[in-house]
Image (cartoon, rainbow, N blue to C red; front, top):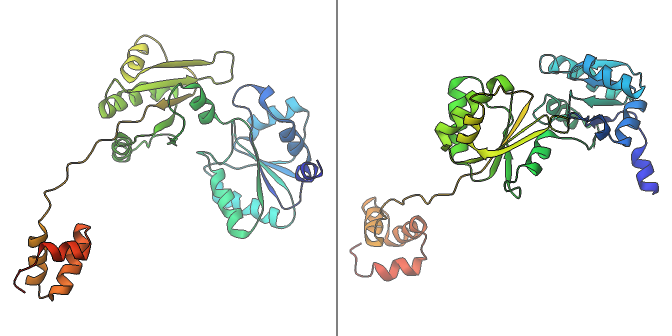
Amino acid sequence: MMKDETKNQIRGGMLYLVATPIGNLSDLSERAVKVLSEVDFIAAEDTRNSLRLLTHLGISKPMVSYHEHNRRERGEEIAERLAAGESCALVTDAGTPAISDPGEDLVALCAERGIPVTSIPGACAFVTALTLSGLPTARFSFEGFLPVPKKERRERLAELAEETRTFLLHEAPHKLVRTLTDLAEVLGGERRIALCRELTKLNEEILRTTISGAIAYYEDREPRGEYVLVIEGGVKTLKTEMPRKSVEETVRAYLAEGMSRNEAVKAAAKELGLSRNEVYAQTIGQDG
């Protein structure tokens, strides 16, 4: 009990990563409320959004913005304040900071400077979606948003075509159909997928289907809300091996390069994955 109480005390010079609800305000933990109430200041992705949450909780705290476009200079400012002994809670608009979020840079900066960081666990959209998907969860890969530039997007999709684990993507409603079409071209239409939207909210929807089925579903429906796509991994295929040189050919090739017999046998054994004795046994009588 004493251990828990000590851990729950707010420490000066500490960065707190505070997970906020992804839709349902009741998901905010008691510990998160305590931290938000007691830190010296709060760094938020969008101070207007976070202000609404704090107002709902009856909390009034100094706030600074920390987002994709100011993370370098603002990160330095926050780190300096932490080094001077202030405590800070980092929050994102929804979910866990530093997941597909510029908060990862601030954590790296603190780690580099020896500034302690701790996490207040809570809602995380991709973990919630994974648990609801009905797809394998033992091994998975979180990919965030696909790149926007065409070349990078093609390269990422080509990598995902080789992925055997369940993988997850975030997607905005206006880009959903394009992404589903791209996935169908690369993975095939029969790959299973779960489309999770409005998670923890009143209109939560989990569509479990195939990629082709999802494309058909949205032919006459407008995508609404932010999506997490959970996609079934592919089946591992065996690559066709190149014809392997014989032991004799391999040793002769090394002898032709001027190696001694011992050197040639050693090199051939390493190349072919055999023991030296096996190579010797199969090359007795070769000319040196």
